[in-house]
Length: 383
Image 1 (tube, rainbow, N blue to C red):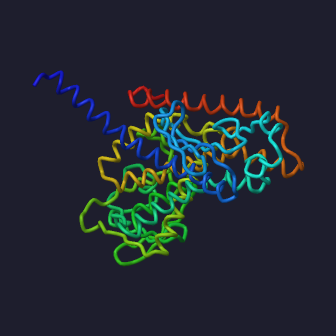
Image 2: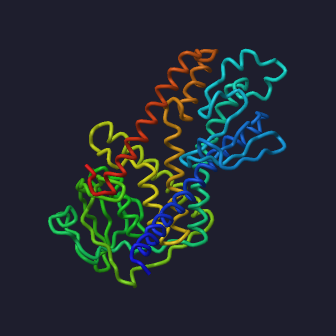
Image 3: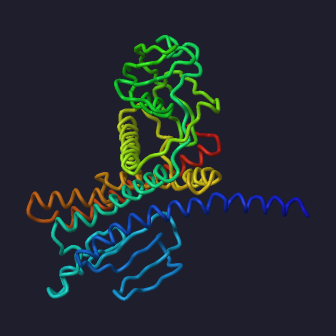
């Protein structure tokens, strides 16, 4: 068999090995987001004209008994629900059509709904993303559990905060600032949330308890997602089989842990955005479709479970980003509705139009920048 054919086959297998997991994760997250808008809109009696996964030319379409077009479009980077009265996929009001719309036809038009109903329909998309993440996390924790490492310090890095504080191999971390530690992952997470502030550790050593105080050191490291700044102590985790355990959760504990995971992802996102604005963080963590596809392919090698967990994390990020007060995103719409509720009348058509134009430019610029970021990072040229 010619080597060129083998190379081409390897390339195709590798390409689809990344593409298919990426499309699965993205389609799941986008479908749930748009379904949130769709279901609440239908609940309030608003006519849905189009439900599309992707943008651009239609690859597939069908119409249901309500006249809604269900479509799969050529550009798979998102999706949209278009309600009656919307001018486009970004839900800008079609002011010309609204001006000439007969009164009898306004009851199922989105712009003619009350402010509260419009806000509920718009907020339903991001909330559906959070719900998807909650369901994935809770199901994983309750049905599968997690393999974790005991919160035992197997080693201490030289010249680290842990060494300066007097930690020794064999120490078991019982609590940090009064919060009980069940696993080594708990320890790492609590340290990462410290923002470099002093922590108080309750430690078990040789069957006795003692208290140690230490201030984590802020370090930077390269990851597949970019340059990461995080506080570290210099602990080395155990890799002994006897220190591994399968942590299983009851329904209530799984629900609480799932909610905690969602809070953690949102907290880290807010921390990164504020750090980026303040110049503490690097912009190379802004990931676009190329890097998400790469990570999806790598995670898929470990099975469907880890891929679903990645979908949960991405769903939280998509939900949170959509709530940012940027025109064209759901958060931008909610700002307009809040202004309308306070003023007693909608924001002018001209102001909305120009805001959406600015929002479109911002979103497009962010997508182009993140895609360039991805290419530079994955080719080893990340700045």
